[in-house]
Image (cartoon, rainbow, N blue to C red):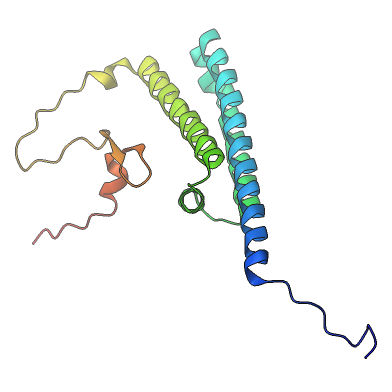
Length: 171
């Protein structure tokens, strides 16, 4: 048998899977790091612009927030996912890696900082919105603006996100 006719040595499946897993982990780590850094940079710029003039920030500079969409799109494309939930699932699969945990936490912190900044900006623009107090009575609906912790992702989310999954039979 000549060399051309000899079958190629097969690579062990486990070895190929380990290489694929390592490449996927490195890609996820890179995307999480990049996204966290970009969000932090954009937030710093937005905070500076808002300090100068909140009205100008809202009228003009808020466009910078739109840049985040492109960065999320690029990360989703690189990770071959379609949603933020898919990114969270990828992080969960590789959560045993300390570097993945750190990068994910940094991204969650950046997103939380953005949420806080936007809430503060809203409060500065519309101070009367924070003055609403609603008395809760047993059986009444609570405020949808209430933040709760999602036990699966350990992220703070608004109650209204969970309300979209609840179906109530009004009969």
